[in-house]
Image (cartoon, rainbow, N blue to C red; front, side):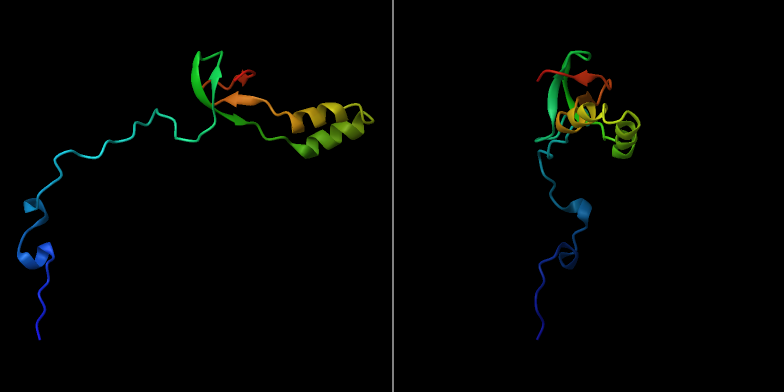
Amino acid sequence: MKTLESSPSSLGASPAELPQSVTPAPKRRDDTLAVGSNTARCSHCNKTVAYHYSPINHKKQLFLTVFTIGLWLPLWLGMTLCPTKLCDECGGPIWND
């Protein structure tokens, strides 16, 4: 028993002959920010930009804390608990949202 297929190749139509969409899907611009990304107003760039947090080198902080006999510990805790936002455009700190 022979079955009928409804694919374009079985109908003899090439992909170029098939109807195309009248309105193509809008393309995303490369300079737009993704939805849900971390953004803030940068006072250096004067625009809304994405930001990141710089990683903390905990081995270096531990060395400094031991070397200074614990005096560096409050600074290390401050850097860990309250990290500074850094602008992805200029690299400057972002203090206010």
